Amino acid sequence: MTLIADATPLIFLAKVNQLRLITEVFEAQILIPSVVEKEILCPDIPPDEERLLRAFLPTCKVVDVRNPHVYAGGLSFADNCVLTLAVQEHASMILSDDRLVRRVAVIEGFRAVGTLGILIRAKRRSLLSAEKAMGIFDRFVKEHTFRINTHVYDAVRKEILNNRTK
Image (cartoon, rainbow, N blue to C red; front, side, top):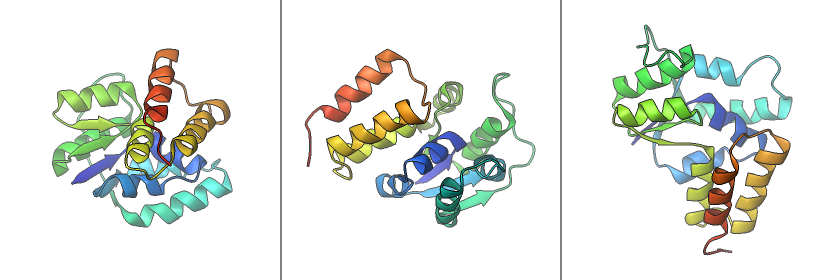
């Protein structure tokens, strides 16, 4: 399985020291466009997050994407690189929190998952207890400006708390 990672899930999981969930949830080769690597290691990154991201990056393959296809006008250069790399590598999945990236990914025939999808999958696989998953979810929203609407918040909360595990 090949997974192409966009910046936001990596950044948010680093904020709560949970990057390991990506490799624990997905048995996949993780590819990151080099432009995404530059995005996650921006100059104003907090030192703890930078340390965690730099420790995680060797588990991935960073790839230069040349001449990315433009999939939609509302997508950034990095977003188009993520989608182009997915097509070039025949990826199984795209990891992104961007709604438009996820829509285009599905149209192009890829599965898409975001930060909250990883959290839910980790809870389902008993990698996190319901309480731990809920704590991380609340930190995303309350401490780290993870923006979601109330409908999504309620659905994720219900999913995490459903069938509680140890």
